[in-house]
Length: 406
Length: 115
Image 1 (cartoon, rainbow over the protein chains, first blue to last red):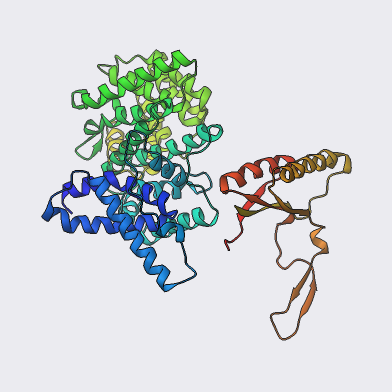
Image 2 (cartoon, each protein chain N blue to C red):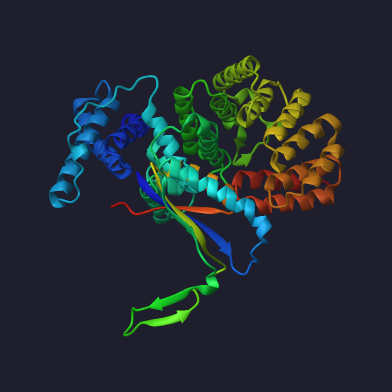
């Protein structure tokens, strides 16, 4: 596939599937027709050139293919009569500012009645246009397993009659939270791959940011949507400085000159927008806005030492109020260590007892190292190394352990 | 419209609470049933007698075999159910939330097969 066609296809795939799903009421028909339209495009575009409205072209071509398929099936099986579908030759909806079809598709893919891993897979497949093989590779499961997961989820949507609709205002906040969680999961898996050879899976972070932008365009007034996009941009801006020579570089040691200033500016603007809106509406910021604000403080600071730790600790306090959990408390303890010293930080970390979590061990190890308690630090580094499969993180932790004084 | 089964399962061997504790539950379920009826979602509902009173019939072999007890040993058994009409899963889940609160039990939602 040429890069141009692949890029256009990725961008338009969700739109095509969403539009056809509304028209034909069937995800399988929509998905298959979108795939067939790509094959036609691959044949025609290199010869005829890319059409002026590639999205419209793909949707029309896919709709024609879907109709052909439904006609064939009807001839084969008289019982399979979808009379309504076959007479619907209306042109595809113009793609305007508010693209309801894709929004419907996102809410269907992230429905709470589907298992979380199925939501992620369906979203990447139907909205992101990733192939089953690509999704399987990204999550390190065999392709047949991933294919089954997606097939089963689509069968449940059909069997249980999961609606193809944007939820009512009553349910919107809760359902939107599920959608944002799926996108953030994709981003996180890309940003710190939990296993495999690549420390960062750019195809996942890029896709999550793209989905975040789609959501932002569809729901411009939703503060948590802006918050999630800001968070991803501000974290992703540090991508280039985050791995050096196959080794993870933690935030205190990162080369801040290597950060992407364009993404940071965009993220900061979104965070400011969230703050303004919160002030105007009196609605307190949610989880993603607070996490974005934390990262805005980090990306604003000239160095780790010159970071506004008081503000970061205050933001984590707010976050603990809306999203209590030991991982948030761990991050707060890191800020406390900067404000009140490593001994106070360590006491807070130890209270959490997150012994299955690599970041807990790594944080303890670092604080123990700073306190000069080398042998305890060594044990903690060992535990952290054992708890992560990310090769760059292991490399960093091993080097740190090696630097401890005897 | 689709039909959905909303079923409520009980743990095997747990004592049935005393009547005075159950009375508000029955009242809440009654109110829920009336709401289902007045909104046109009601198809059928009922509570089942104790699982110990179940009888299993197997006529898949040469002759029917009748045995005392449930067909499979299980920690949980079906205690009662509703069959409702709902536009889609979201509508059915909204009913299930009310039903679960009324009967103070988990409610499993399953769609009937399409025609």
